[in-house]
Image (cartoon, rainbow, N blue to C red; front, side, top):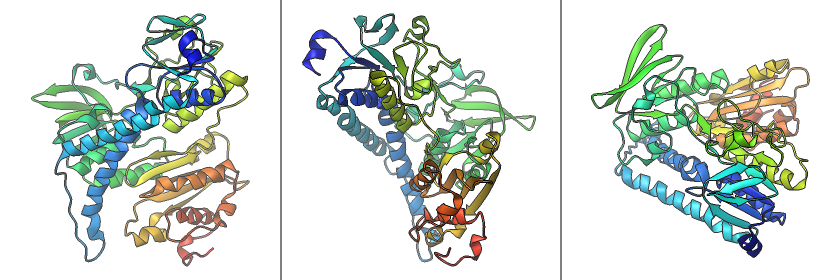
Length: 472
């Protein structure tokens, strides 16, 4: 904390929210010589490190280790088995990792930037400034980065039962014998598979299909893989009611016009997140909100109130930690330097950490057509990718979408055990306006998952099943 900030309370910028977006904005501003008030309330670090990305992905990796051992039999002459011996120790190790990263990547960083003063307390936006725990501040500009929290689905009775969220599910000290997961988005799919691999009987239900924003071929294939692992997947249903009876949760749904009741020991709700705007006084201050409470911003991160910006999950836009940090960095630059930068998510990658992983960037085939493009597509199954054949794991596919007239790549999605680390190649291709032909002519290393992108690009014009290794 700088002496000027501590002694006078004068700040060029106030950032409300001390998660990934808040830290990104504060550090960006401090690096430009600004004096910043970074305002947190409760545990520092936000969703990603405390209850989101970090804890969930380490638990998912643990479950993958179990599955990997059990799947050794896909190689002739091998056999393997693995099981959970001490769930509490696994949870404790997860908590230790979270604590370590929170300390190193958030708390310890505060002392590295003399221009940042950390203030703890509830904040409100008011005319002429903000208040922090009742104390008035008058910064030059304000950035709101308060994140989001799990949202309740619209199911009669849900408010009257005990339920798990993506946060509390990872805090369980005992594995549930059975688990009902409501919601087929990325959180629902990831956690359903993780608990199933750990030994829980899992039922996953959703109104639409799994990962509804993905290509339908990806969704259908992933659904089959989850079912192959023993997960009961129910899609295309309507929720009737939910209640707790005789120590179990019972959800009544309608499928094809007939009611069905699903029972489980615990229920996990993964049906979306709500922006954290309650208590900030935004409506009274003239900050316009969406119906769901998210802050309305323009392409330069500005709210409807002059001098007030917003970034991250609180806006409801692109709810990924790296996009929150990116948007917050733009907000800080614009707040201090005249609103010259524009938010650009045209080449934004996203990943779902199921196994196989799902990763994508750009437009789906449906979205491209809706945008007015005449499209062409190429789909290559992993049984055409030498890496998958060598690993004896051909679960997955790759789909590319291109403009039929110009051959320019518009989007791509990968379903593969190592798909997350391959998608960045498509990101760069789209960012630099590559054609499918150019991608197909690029040199790729052999026996890698990413080589499947070369095959998919070549698949626009030829049958890749008729190519020899590395041909083309």
